[in-house]
Length: 216
Image (cartoon, rainbow, N blue to C red):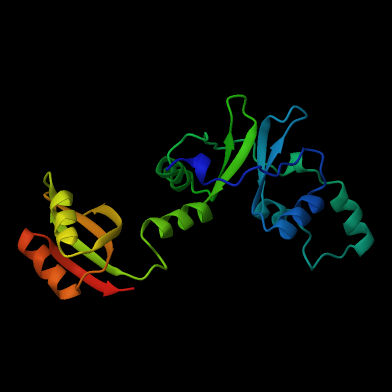
């Protein structure tokens, strides 16, 4: 899975002299949380978030009149509010590496740029979550098993064979590390067309400890 296949494209961009109120209107109408900022050549030079714009909005407690507020707000341009330290990614970056960047920098989205630093898309935490749900078969009926399995070669092959022999089909597989158990691996699978008790018994005999089993 790579960013290209999960990003939103084409991406909506703005320029530096756009009034911030217009940018905020765009975000609210199109349900965006961030907008890449480009120069006249379409090169990425910054990014502005909904939070940046809301911080610039006037307080309800202001003593200025509505006309004074509107006049002053119209003078605030994006170049005064945007962040110029933009964390970006490339279209061929793996989805997990893009997600790692978001976690590392504590941000909710990444502009996707080409070799000339032109924005060609945007990948957000929502895109990542949507993919995660799909990977684990979220919303699809089946038997979901969480297991501790030996961290040795051939474990997945034996598991797949056991499911196959019972006429079942594996919809999704995911692994995760187990704290303080370096010789074990956490495994989550979703299967269909198998009897729960029979499959659990078979897996336990293979040395796979079923921690949780539930129909979804």
